[in-house]
Amino acid sequence: MARTMQTETPISTPRHVAIIMDGNGRWAKARGLPRTAGHKAGVERVREAVRTAAEAKIDYLTLFAFSSENWRRPEQEVSDLMGLLRFFIRKDLAELHRENVRVKVIGCRQSIQPDIRALLVDAEQRTRENTGITLVIAFNYGARDELVRAVRQIAEAVQSGKLEPESIDEAALSAHIDTAGIPDPDVVIRTSGEQRLSNFLLWQAAYSEFVFPSCLWPDFDRAAFHEALAEYARRDRRFGAVSAPDLAVCS
Ligand code: IPE
Ligand code: IPE
Ligand code: MG
Image 1 (cartoon, helix red, strand yellow):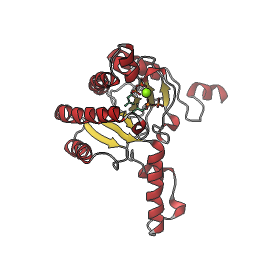
Image 2 (tube, rainbow, N blue to C red):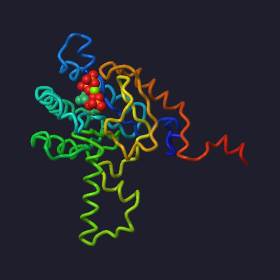
Image 3 (cartoon, protein in one colour):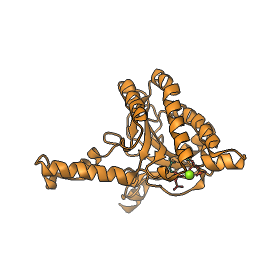
């Protein structure tokens, strides 16, 4: 069972979809284009994905836009990716806001350029009261870094006497990570056929379903998104327990 909320949304609709948007470079290479052309094409798909998710009544869409390891790429590519993020926020924020999208950013705010930090903060603040889909942008995000930052905050709280070590539980850790207040992803989709997490949502994806479409991110159109959702709907989630029909057989 994927959803327990009492809305008209089908039970098999995930509440939170997280996507590792992979394959831009290969898409460009296959066309004899520079990698940046693949990233540009990828941005077009971001627009479409947000719309598709909102129409499908998904509450949260998390998109992995830039990892804490992506700084290892050539300087020019990093700079092009930063330029594209600036372009996306400047060009699309007004429309996202109009469409009632709430923007939230996860990842480390340090080591990103101050103007980008300001754009991200502005996007969050301007859209904070919106009540439609929440678009979570994972930017300069790495799950290990996120966990280290959370543990440091918790250690500081203990050191200053604000927190007892005994009261540190799963909920306490969840409350200190970047996704505090956001439900865990029901499904993680990674395009391009790669089947790894690449340091994405390690804590939050503990019970997520995984779907690995072979298409490259710039080809991940509405139909491919719906196919991934259909694949998710066919899964039987058990969370360590026994599924309902099997339980009936047991008793
Ligand atoms: C994903 O596409 C975009 C980012 C990581 C920013 P890639 O750039 O990783 O594309 P491939 O994996 O090289 O094809
Ligand atoms: C993961 O993709 C990061 C993003 C999609 C932003 P990568 O292309 O960086 O991952 P690896 O290096 O293939 O594991
Ligand atoms: Mg890649």
